[in-house]
Length: 502
Ligand code: NAD
Image (tube, rainbow, N blue to C red):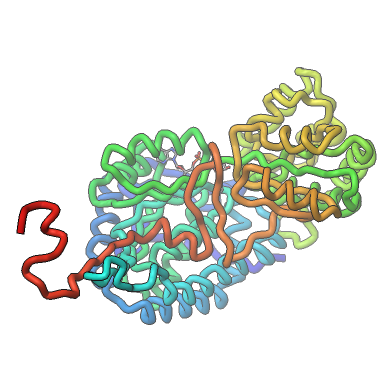
């Protein structure tokens, strides 16, 4: 069983972390953090008001000169210490993340928390490796070099599906590069973002460098995106809200980083290892109860393997254990809320009404109190149907057959999204073609889901632009200055003749 702590006692001062201290919000509206496995409140807190956002931005702005002026080595040392603090509190983080999201404790203990610690260690190293083109005399008469500079105060907004990892993905590259940050987690899941900010303070990162605002999207979120002293918005969430965020950010010419929805295809060619593909599909579809922007959501299976694949996936899905997220034996937890569960159920009902076949699942389990939904396999849906085209964000996999390789790849690319995809084959040339032609920011071959700190995560098409994780994320969180310095010392430069006669 999970290591528990008293959440109400820990956040008795409030759920806003501004200038290095926890305090209550001033929106005048209480918000509950609910355990989706039971429907019970684990914390009631006051939401942040727009004025709280202003205060957090002011704290971040005040911390900026000192933090941006620290050496890369000093920032690296602080991040190394942060990795140590996170490791020491790993069990608390796993518990809080499981509690607020309903994630099985095995997932938080083996994936969310160690992934976050590894990310922190990665950015501790990367802080010392900001890159630029070599200084040189490109014109012959000047030395040119690049300064890679931080931007200032970053405003970041995160969703509820991986609150700890999203906090880490937003905060780490931003502060490693010398920025300061105000992060708004989802108001449903603020706990681990607050704990991450507290851990940063414990590691000696100065007050105001990392601030967390627990507020609603429409007021606190929009204030953060529209704030004149925030220079960049980094948003992870749905494509619909991302469009609204982009509109607001554009008014103040902010730099924008958008990590949006996904509808990842899972393409199984007829030479694939069937057992590997079946296991990969179930793991890829059910991770985090399907509330994963890269989850396998559309399996395209070449006709000779189709029936065996459908039978294998249905069989494996039927054996998945739903239950108490705090029990290490539990495979699948609830969805984030009853509302999300009902949304998923409605997608499946509409798919069935439109002629799709529910091979397994498709029900709300009667014996579980929380927001649970059975692992569900949907066959015979049309390519242009809602269940194949729209983000369901639940434990639901649609499966469709294809004949030629051309057709399989075309179907895989036929949605608005482009976050991730996978190809399953033992043929090198097919794999090579699929990795080239699949339009997604990540393509796996013979696997689906793994991520690593050294490699970027980010979308194509309506899945957004910009990268999280890896050194590529520094392209978002730094700006490049060209410095061009005369080497001749001449008062009358040669090139002046172009402008006036010498
Ligand atoms: P959401 O878009 O509803 O909310 C995301 C965040 O935006 C929340 O913090 C919310 O409070 C805030 N928000 C809402 N309205 C706002 C507004 N008008 N102005 C500013 N902020 C506002 O998404 P969600 O339901 O929390 O999360 C699920 C979505 O996130 C899915 O679409 C999923 O694909 C996406 N996601 C994408 C990635 C990725 O890397 N591409 C990763 C995780 C989740």
